Image (cartoon, rainbow, N blue to C red; front, side, top):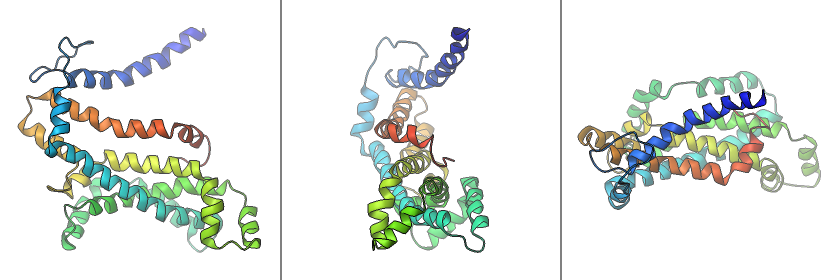
Length: 265
């Protein structure tokens, strides 16, 4: 009976891994060859070499890493004190505002495409990393506040009171006591902010033209003129998977603990 139930997760894992595996298989095939085979007969790394040696390609990944990093930093700086305020204080409209943040998180980025383009065009920020990072903050900051509020609420209020008695300033309290206590929550929150900003395509593509174009936009542009070179596009897709996988591996212990503690939306 147990063996029969073990088949279900095995089938699920196979269905999840199969598209990624075929993406990797196609990425090591030659131009004009995109066969769905288990083992490619003439595997080559030429597609990866082309991408990593061509600035028009690899700068797309650099651009994405830049605005994603900026987004994560801004989200953390804004969300930590905001989450602490929602967790520790009650003020008129606090609950409504807190749940309103969830509504912002549920908003589709396409809804705000035109307003963001108009705003950043008016202030001459189109085709900058900061424009994409700020636009993404509209979605990642509410998510970060929701997750971190759950972790902070799990910390006894007595910690705040003891810090006040011991004469800690607000900055000392955050740096020495609060942040170490919610380090797992910070890691989990940063991971979710990173992943949203890394995989979001519509806003990042619309707000950039040349200098800050992310790899997703470059893949779309290349796909329209190089549709026959499917293996090259597959190699670009494989490279796009690497940062998220590496981040998940590095903070895997925090993720495992974070999913069992706090609020992960």
